[in-house]
Each structure stands twice: as C-alpha cells, then as structure tokens.
Amino acid sequence: MNSDAAWFRFYGKTPRTLDYPDISMYDIIKRTKESYPTYTAYDFMGKAVTYEAFLEEIDTCAKALTAMGIRTGDAVTVCLPNTPQAIVMFYAINKIGAVASMVHPLSAENEILFYLKESDSRIAITLSQFYDKFEGLKGKTKVEKVIVTKIEEALPPIKGFVYKFIGHEPKVADDPWVISWNEFLNGAKFVKEDPYYAGKGEDSAVILFSGGTTGTSKGIMLTNLNFNALAMQTAAASQCFEAGDIMLSVMPVFHGFGLGVGIHTLLAHAGKCVLVPRVNVDEFPGLFKKHRPNYMAGVPTLFEGMMRNKDMQKADLSCLKGVFSGGDSLSVELKKKIDAFLKAGGASIQVREGYGTTECVTASCLTPIDYYREGSIGIPFPDTFYKIVIPNTNEEAPVGEMGEICLTGPTLMKEYINNPKETSQTLRVHDDGKIYLHTGDLGRMDADGFIYFVQRLKRMIVTSGYNVYPSQVENVIDSHEAVMFSTVIGVKDDLKMQRVKAFVVLKNGFEPTEEVKASIKAHCEKYIAKYALPKEYEFRDNLPKTLVGKVAYRELEKEEEAKLLAR
Image (cartoon, rainbow, N blue to C red; front, side, top):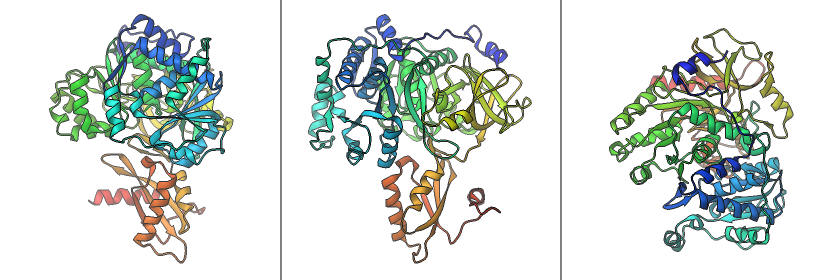
C-alpha cells in the first residue's frame, strides 16, 4: 500500500517523485559552492567558513589522503564528534571515491577494534582525547596510520591559543604510527593532480554501524544515492528549507540522523551548520541567542532536557522553522509538552516526528508541516513506500492491523558488509518486484497512509536515541571472574525512554557485596561504550527460565513494569 493520496492531500504541489542526480555527495556540495560561494557552510565555536573556503579545505584534505596512498574503494575510519575535521574528512574521502567508516568516539577499545577490522580501514582519524583507545590496537588491524587532531586546530587563532594554553588537549606520545592533522595536510603539496573521482549514485560511500537480530554489531554499507536522495527528500517533505538557513547540528556525525539530516541535507541546500561537538543543554541558550537557528533535529531526551533548562524556558524561539524528533519514539504526552514549550518561546511550529532506521540512513517518513494525527509518525518521503506485513512473511496485512514495518525507496542500504545472510534476511524482493527493507519493527498503517510505530520486534534497548544490544552487554558482564551469567533488559525511564539494567548471578564462592558490584562496574566501563553501560545492577540467586531453559527476560521486564506501577 502506498500513501499517494495522503501525500497530495497534505503536501499539495510538492512533488511525490523527485529526480535524483547520479553523482557523489562531494559533487552535490560542489554544486552548492558554485551557486552560493560566499554563504557560510559551517560555524564552529565562532569560526565561520564559507562554501568556497569549505571546498578548498575538502580539496586539500583529498590530496593529503592521496599522498597517504588512499585510493578509490579504500576505507577510512572517522572517529570524531561534530568538528570541522570530521566533515572535511568525510567529503574528502567521498571526493576520491573511498569509503568513510563513521565510528562513535565514546566506543570502548574492543568495539573500535571490531569496527576497524570489519571495515578494513587503512587509516583512521580521531581526537587527541580518544587516542588512548587506539594506542593498544597498533598492529592488530590493517590501519597503517592514525591521524590525531585537536579541537584547537579548528578554532579561530586567539581562541585556539587560549584553548591550548589552558591545557584542554592531552598530549599524544611520539609514535611513527601517529601523524598530526597539520602534518597530514602538509602532504597535499606533494600531489599535483586533482584526485577527483567521478562517483556515481550506486557507489559505496559510507559505513555506519548498527546491531541486528542476533545482537551482533553490523556494518551498514550506504551509497551516494542514499545520502543525496535523503537530502532531497527531507527538503521536499519539510517544505521549509531555504538557502542561508541555519541548523543547530547537535546530533552526532557517526549517527545517520546527524550525518544525513544535520549535515548533508543542510549543506546540499546551502544552509549553515552550527557544529556542536558535545551536547550540553546549558549551552543552548547562548547558541540560540548567538546563531538564531532555523532548524534543530534531536532525540526526545534532548528536547526534554531543553525544556528543563530555566534559561531555555526564557529563550526566544521565534527563529525556528523546523524542529524534528527522531532516533526514538516520541510519546504523545511529550510531543504536547514540546509543542507548548515552542509556542511559549514564540515559535509558530510544532515538533515533527520522523521514523527510519540506519539501514535507510535515517528518516523515511515525517509528520506534515501543519498537521498531526495523534500517535502517528507521519507519511513516507517522496519515492518511499511503506508496507505492513504479517511477521515472518512478505504478505501484506489488512489496513489498520499490526505487522512488521517494511519500506522501499532510494535510501535503502546496499548491504551489511561481510554478512550476506543478514542482508538477505533484511532486504527481500516482494511479489511487486521491489526490494523491501524488513525493519523488525511492529506498526500499522491507516486508510490514509499514515504510519504508526508500536514497538521493536527485536530485543533491543533504546536509550537516549542509541541502540543497545543486550547480548553484547551480557557477554562483557559474563566475562567477569565473579559472574556465572547475567541478563540485561531495558527499563522504562522518563528521561532516557529506557535505561539499561543488569541482573547478575554470581559464581559459587562470591558474595553480592558492594566491592564485587564495583568490580563488575569497572570491568564494564572498560569494555562497554558509556551510553550502553547498565545504570543498575541487581544480584539474583537465579533467574526465571522458559520451558526450554532460556532466561525468560520478559518476566524480568514484567517485574520492573510492576514496580513502576506500584509507585
């Protein structure tokens, strides 16, 4: 079933079908530069860079990559927050036809090791603050060099000097394996020819990491077309993007939402990205006062944090033309609170909810600009079609009935790298001849084509917009010397949507003391990313089991739900 009727009803003359150029992401940005050379591409802590200067930075970086031996098809790991170095490197990699593997800088050392191996990266770039996670990986992967950059290198001269002087940047030991950002860029002068590769839409361009039905992290291969189509679709469905508009780019570049919407969509339409490397709602009042952003995209917990900030409650929000919530489900009650908050701040808009998965970059549907159907996540983007199927089949469910959410369109991933089995299970050809993404999410569609997300079919925890896979956390806990086995669940949380809780059964000879708990926590902090760490540990003599002997984690979830209801 498609939503053509709903589209034309709520979007009027906005095209339902778009014409996507068969070019690279770099070429899209170059087109922007040719039309708007003096417009600001990004602003980072007071340093504003025009599109003309931005392209020069990208071109220099592309030459530097070439000088290091990176060629078309090679993978480069970008382990950075929202900094100029991250986006310059991203588009430079794309210019030469290489693949950018985007990695969360707060990932644990073992996770980074996995990402480097899975992507077959030849070089990596990270901030000096995170280099210690790479230091122990030397010789364990194909990475030949690690580029270490610093925040101060992207700041205006005076601010950079002050930043360096007060010692924000940790020192990195001398090592032939390490190359500084400036030393790396200096290599560009040895490359005389322009290393431009005429990329096509179907070319592999980006790897984003996610998890799957088994809980094993997977690399999602995305193409130029995936990102370029997303940029065009988002602008068409939003009905509010204009050249010169400003986005508060808060969502991280290693996340499909942050990279696809917060960066590429804005840059493809001559917008200005205000790069925010670290989310701190206490800084938001100053950012709104200084930059007067027109757009903001974030997870529900981010907006809740903003509403709790006393200075934001007094902020002038009349500059906003679009506020988009994604990465996690937005409850009806929280939406009402956000809408009231926006109105009180002088904004004439509602928060608009989207839905998507990393397997289609990020959002693939959106609530209309001036209409809201309670509980709905909106209608599909141009050229994107949804279908609700009976779980474990390709058979379409009747209108209004629950089933698995499937979708097809130009943003569907190319594959899970090194995982043809999971790829074939997720991307399936249906009777209409189209390839559909089986999301593993439960939902329904009404007669007008509005989509309603209900819950995830997979056993996955979503906390503050991040996916946490219980089996990964359990594997780490179980490796502690005192632990017999463990089970991890998501517990409802008003701020984070869910928080991670671990139930632990100790080995004989170990007592559930605070010392043992502290030891397990320290062990987890070494191997698990900060956002995925359990917030609570509960010791049990045993755990409930199913008839076949598996841990009945659903029983534990019910227990926690009962505790919440009893409060």
